[in-house]
Image (cartoon, rainbow, N blue to C red; front, side, top):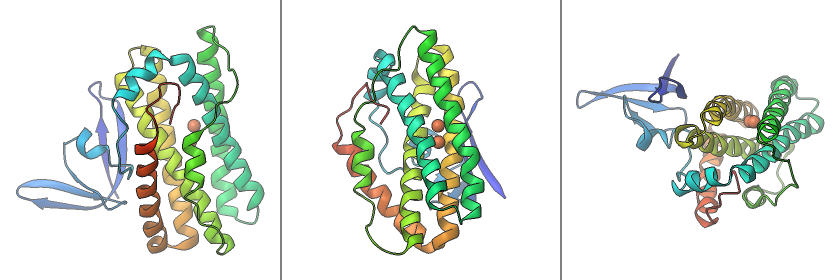
Length: 243
Ligand SMILES: [Fe+2]
Ligand SMILES: [Fe+2]
């Protein structure tokens, strides 16, 4: 099994992607990843923006506005982690018969809750309070992508893919914060979260494939990605929201 590892200028790993095929074209080594994206060995940003499968990179203005509103970002982020933990608990409660799902989701609940604790710690260090939960327009709009009806497993795959999508977008935003935020402690913090959420993204996708097969899930995943790009494009760039 071959993986592409991308590092930032400090040598920290910022992407790990499983390679399906490696080929030589015009004396250059290219990789094809699990989502069907082709990458040139040694190239970064332009290609790696798509490594999570995302069709539209975040507007670069977001990270600048976000770091000027760090209290709002931390509060919104805390609730994202709380919702991620709640979402995994709901999957366990709704599908207790699926052993693979229960086994995979149980440690993820603990990880998401530890992320919540770590965001609260960052708020406390800065003398900031959690505050009220804000309306999550991104997630509300994503819920509109989900297909109604179908079998129980089809419905499960819809939920798993939505979770995978939120993980992928969060991972991309954490990467932006890690690369561009000036606060050294938050830079490291977002790096660690980025790595963790990338692992969750892969978990959700592989679980989905185990229930409805590679072909079905890949096709549906592409549809999710197209719709998510439309949502991102239509949402206002806000420095007080993680998404
Ligand atoms: Fe998380
Ligand atoms: Fe996560």
